[in-house]
Length: 357
Image (cartoon, rainbow, N blue to C red; front, side):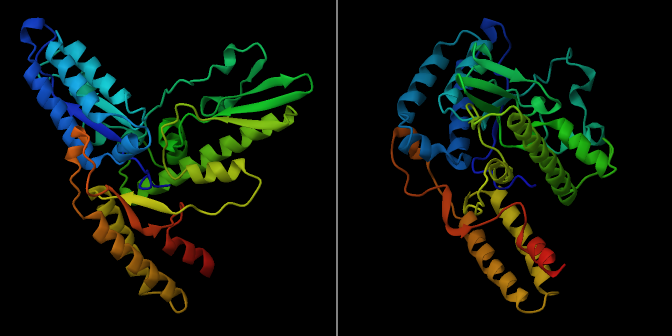
């Protein structure tokens, strides 16, 4: 399952250390420039920027000015980092994160901190990283809640909430809608594909590993639901507090939780080189398949080609939203509303292959 349908791009800022930890080495003007760089990058790449203003009512001008004032008064690098983190926390978005670049002159760094190339384990190369988002609703502290521990609880914790004398509610927590938050699922998937931690793995290989890891997570979800059913629960409560979104895994998760057939949602995308690259890749795949496909399926593929070409044009349109930091409404949106795409975890050519089988 590929990651290109994440509505909000995972945003990571690499900020150079603006001096050492000692107060006399701290330079607030360098941190102000880092902060301005952060805002420029968010203006160009952060999909939810408009939503935070229009829906959440966040005053970006006030937030920006307060952050700048705090940085000017910050006595140290440590305090400046906390201020930057506080700025990002104000958006309430799990996709926003900051990665601090290690001081290049720090000779005390661990020997393996600079591992490169084929020394980096496969799943780490593919972007799998543990996600430790604590629940915002502490059910385990309630006297009428009973936690159930299973082998799958490390992915999706479950328990039973006694709501009344004769009514138990099953509770399942989904901390994030993404297989990429569980490196061991990647390792299981890679092992099934007979890949080792040192195996090369291109984009196509990474997609296969991702689909397999996502299937393993879906199976874990199904097993946890069955455990709750065996505990004779009368309703199911899904805790997604603090969940920052994720990948296409939202779709199989929803289908697993619902007894009713669901239709794939239409998806929007953002004007960014990431999407341009993904759309070009999909278009090339469909064009290659259409040359080998007989009617009427060829017509379906050509329809897909036309949609993707229009989407490509939209993905490359520039959009300057820098004025949002002065509370000016931008003249454009980073989110492209047309053409409307409808992609589940199967692309068009994969669907046709199943139809022909």
